[in-house]
Image 1: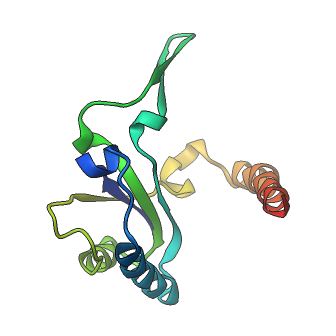
Image 2 (image 1 turned 90 degrees about the horizontal axis):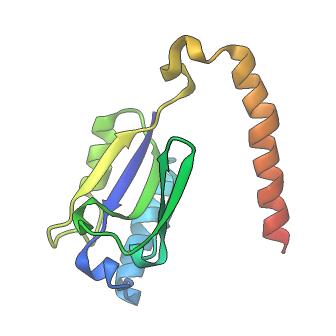
Length: 147
């Protein structure tokens, strides 16, 4: 199963604080362990919400709302995407993560897989999705990496 590991924002991350060299090294070592175990699929940090926007949908109207956003504890500062055998395995991995001893809260949520959509997704729609959308995205990533 895939699990999204969501790192909540803090007052420091919302102020634009970035990890120092020691913290980056510690997290790098942890990410290496995740990679060696075949768990790590993706890991990214996010910039402060002051650099982001939200788009509110109301019928056909779309309203862009500039950050920063209130309720820091509800904001996301970064995430991992992990491939694990179970939620218990994901919990065991996150318990080993460095840098979160200062009262941080981490949220782990299973990623919805195609089979979770039941009859709304057929083998044909999955094949179409994989052949069209995912291949197109992979080509665009390759093209972007060359530039």
